Image (cartoon, rainbow over all chains, first blue to last red; front, side, top):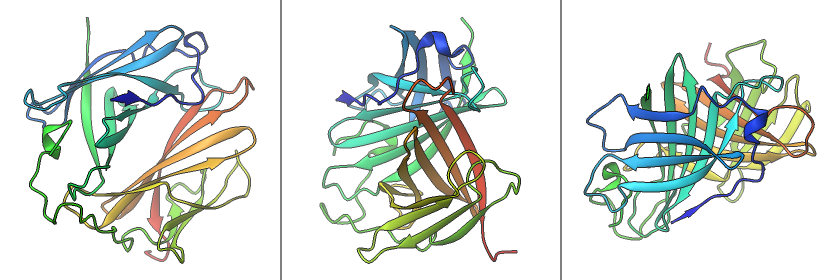
Length: 132
Length: 140
């Protein structure tokens, strides 16, 4: 599995990442998708770590991927969205997260590269932040 | 069959390796921003080119050029793993000073378009995200 390195990585000092940082749990405890997302600051950048819901999956812990953070305008310093990508070899997924009224909405854009016949597809899941 | 999420562990509905092209019908046409005061992309025109690929033509607003030009979508996505109907796409515009990556999905008749705008140089402008809604033109 490889992580996508994006062209532009905003420095941690340039953006207030607090609205996004931390551990986020899926509001749907019966999800078959992503159960937990953890966004952390690391070496002047940001990393996303994803945990899949089903322990029987081959990849219960997707590991860390570089995350790029975004504000809601060019003159804002407050992060409210991120993008990140995972490549599992047989599948690539682009994750698009944004906050709306305290809820983190993650859209998954899954692309299958194997010969399984599965259609590439979009799905969304909703997460709430766990306070330490 | 390998899967990274349990929701992707399914019995294929088609033969192995038989990955059919997704139908573009749900996406094709002219789409108007539901926010007439938008400073981003007022209109999107989605067409199929001679190779059968989806093209994206954005007409810009306040922050970009008036006409962003027509580009080919990077990837198409269905609403679910079994579907043969395209209901979303990704596409990337490269401008001199910034990259704008579009991630769009159809939902209940609306086209929801998220844009991830990354500045290529240290202009002092923050990389920013937008999410806007489009209705099909002529649907009123």
